[in-house]
Length: 262
Length: 331
Image (cartoon, chains in turn red, orange):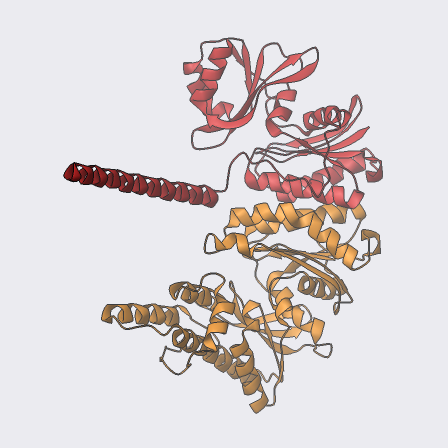
């Protein structure tokens, strides 16, 4: 089983080829964000080095989100193009789960943090039991304070990683009542190797999709969509309020009428 | 095969020798963007990625082809919405890489111009082309295939943009062009005298913000006076003002540069008044007038395929590092 894996969800661009128990090649760059220009040349490079015949790839794995909206689409469109051309299935690996898999075998809770701006993080809570990744809390976009609350409630030791650590680490330290660690440099960012290795697990469980079906999971609506929903719900509430005022007036009138008649 | 995703249409097409369309599939998002009164970039990008594989597969199926039958892959890489462009570019590059197909990046406007080659088999450069759409208003001299000289451009709004804004002001909604065109048929184009803008020292350039403001002022003035507004007259008079300028400047450029052929391109090229006026003006001056059918005027991938063919013939090839360029210049 050979999986080609891509991750361009954040500042890191990473590509890898994983075959069963071996990581054949991985190319990870954490330097400026020019994924559109770098991702495919990187894949081309490792492909040449390991004399990869694309036809021998069984599935294409991609960090499917959350992450930078544009970054996710560069990875997804690349995976979809490869899937279409090679007629191979895609494996949608949730970005945060992929990050957690970097710390396979860790004792305690693994808590990836991706900077989601507006004082929020994309995060999730994971643990490893008998060599398997267990999802304690699925990936989500929440305030940093909420993460601390959840971890304090669990009451277990926690390891943090991800590009949210330098942004929110200090804030978290102040809020946490449980022991914590921060993952070191070689494990603390997105790596396509982890996406590929976890994807093997997904394929075994039959969790694949067609290239046409695949779309990123943003965990957030587009801003315009969010604003429209807010407008509509505000208008709806106003209407309800108006109706309820009208209803009260009607009742008051009725009461008055009854009084007069009475 | 060509892919286009620069704005709100996800499109793919298979084109043979630059002139013969074997398939032309367009998935439009217009209905979705109507909710917002215009194209929302993030929503457009999200829709592109949901549809792109289905659109490509349908284009191949309709043409009775597989990727093995293709000689090259063309893709729009600018100008346009960067997030939207990136979907098409990343997809095209991945297919090019996986299949070892040469990749040709195409300028969106070059695509619009090249739409004329598809239905006018006899049209060859040199010719003058008026490109008018929601995002562009350019007078371009096509010296040769892939060789362009821009001689006129808008200083503010694109013609199509002015159509959209005026349509919104008189309550017609988005997209404004076709709706104003339709309503104008019931109105008097001479009813209201809206200004025809000239740019001093640049006789081929355009400005449409003045006429747009004039319409808005007229509507306000009517409202203040409590006069009823004849929307059809407003639409017809506004449309006439815009078309007059487009035709006049085109004729001036054709005369000054000695062009015997003129082609229309872009979404506004399907406007019936513009077509009729341009044909009349050309006939008077013995200039051959060309325009694509309405389907090829809107954003589509067949036109990108036509342009890609001529670029490919010239030896243009792009690498796997091709990026989307939202403000890409022509020529």
